[in-house]
Length: 241
Image: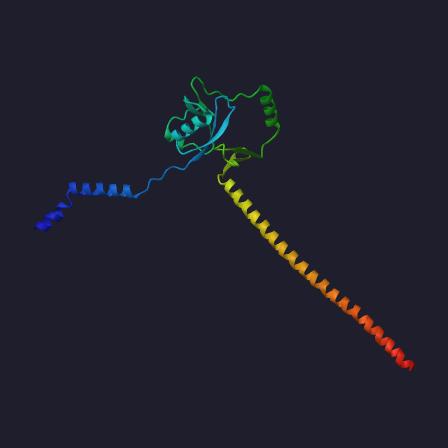
């Protein structure tokens, strides 16, 4: 009976809640916490005279890095460059695409639409009337950090003004790759030098051996000439007798 009561007590609501709480705690402790991946963004100032690429995994991280990059102590706001929409929540920030252009505003500054001169707009209207764009390629080269060796390249392509695609090429380890390439080049040059030196020594040895053999042959011929002369003289004397 006691064993049956203990078994029934295990299925009581309080016991089940304790078990579920322990399972949740255990799963929370076992599952690792994944940090978001840093993404590239383009940040400009209010007059669009400065543009910098910044890698950030969140809104707070972007604000801190923007303050360091633009050397400002306080940021009044962060908005989208295309329409001035404020970026003030983490949820909205996570919905932004990579390489989105953002404008940082200091105290007293406001977002303004990018002005285009009347002559440029008139020329643009004339061109758009008489042409039809088939493809448009935009290359944007930027650096996320001043100490980067090469930087990053963003490629955007638009077909027929309707279909667009973009690719962000990030060369974070280009300096290391270049160093390894130089190291292998130096090793190849050293190996080539050793091979050429060994080959030249071997060829010099062959030439010396050939010259030595020719010298010995010439010496033998030089020694044989007096003997032949003596033999000829002896033969001539025998004929006279």
